[in-house]
Image 1: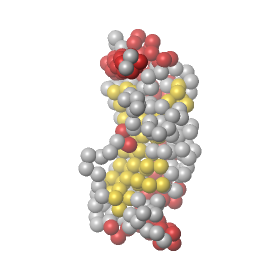
Image 2: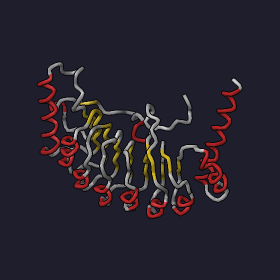
Image 3: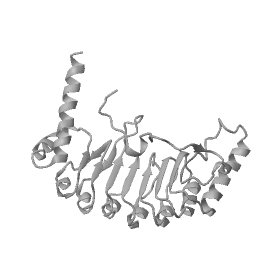
Length: 257
């Protein structure tokens, strides 16, 4: 396996992951919760009971005031389950593993949400609902077919952004038209664009981000000259240039191995 294949921030395992709950009655006031509301075949052989458990989670999340500030939905997420999350008004971080959900409108009503990771977001139709969330400072969007760069450009409070496709089992590129949209993200500290293909490969807009401290790009041949040209005046490009050099050394070592 290529050691330079990158994984998304939100897909990395937590150091001390919370226990996974698959029934509502397992919730005992925890502030950090991992919920498996679907794909319960190994826990419950009865299809009718699995449907009942799912319905209980939807009702619980939608209507019950809890202490949950971090919620990780670790199995398939249908639209009504994502909509139900809007009932958790104290939520600060939400991780969605994957699912057929399309509409993010319910999430825009969460007044304290700071960190959102939408993994396996192949059905997402629009990022527009997120553009009006002033509390959102960290965002990961993985495998969205057409991530709206106009919506991303209006998320001016973002400090960390990961958009693209870093899922280890998929080589499908997420296409971005250009990088001109990044210039409005003046608070951005870290930008990760794994598995992306930029139709207009001009990287110079990244030089306009005053506080950028970390940059991850696919090591594409079309970016290489710009990366090394910008390395002398930008520490983040110098780091990417170092990645190219390490990759070159890796390729050379394997070709002679």
